[in-house]
Image 1 (cartoon, one colour):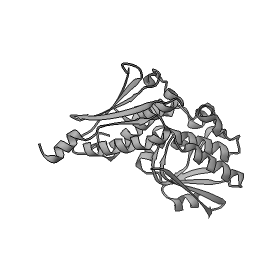
Image 2: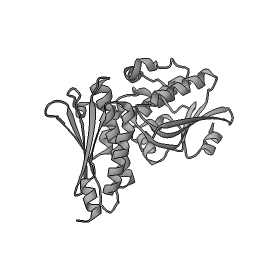
Image 3: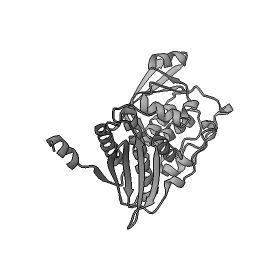
Image 4: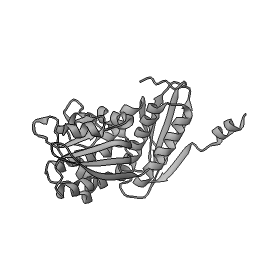
Length: 139
Length: 153
């Protein structure tokens, strides 16, 4: 199963860019997601909702994508995908205060994806909403 | 022996793919089908798929590192144990010696990588390594399950 990405816009208190993922996010396609978000940031998106409702699988490389997306949306130098896996692995991340940020939020993770986020502690980095509507209301 | 039992005995329980990231989906499909047929249960099957994906990804990226090679997965069920061997012909590397990220550290202050082996470990009950005779690696993953489909976790 490949990864399909669809982009949508919504208005909460701020303009929200919604990236909905469908399929499986793994080592073969996670850099494409990072590139999509890099382009959205360059086009002016500043608040991002990742809709994971239809994401059936997320590998640890998906966690690297989430980290990279967070950096990109905070205006930090985006990782160079040409430099490959090593460069992505060598990135640090310093979210001010070490708390949960609000520029990138998640919604709808199903069983397997939710477990990956929880087991690795990545759920502490993101506000995670049950569905798209409640997420939009929270921005 | 019934037809279905014969098919079950004879059906392929091994899948070998070229060492290409685009092949990971085929390995996951293979695992998902085998785990479902064994009655591992949805959560157990998802965990096995996760663990094998991480092991195979590591072999392809860190083991073969762009060189040609193969990754092979075989599965077997013994009593309440679903056993998966992930074999490859990459240079010898024991992932069980990789130090796990410290989960007590807030993720904002961690480096993003290094989660693959940890995830694989968390998804199964046993993870053991041995070198493959003739070169390469064998990582064995075991997940216990109850045959009535109830999960032990």
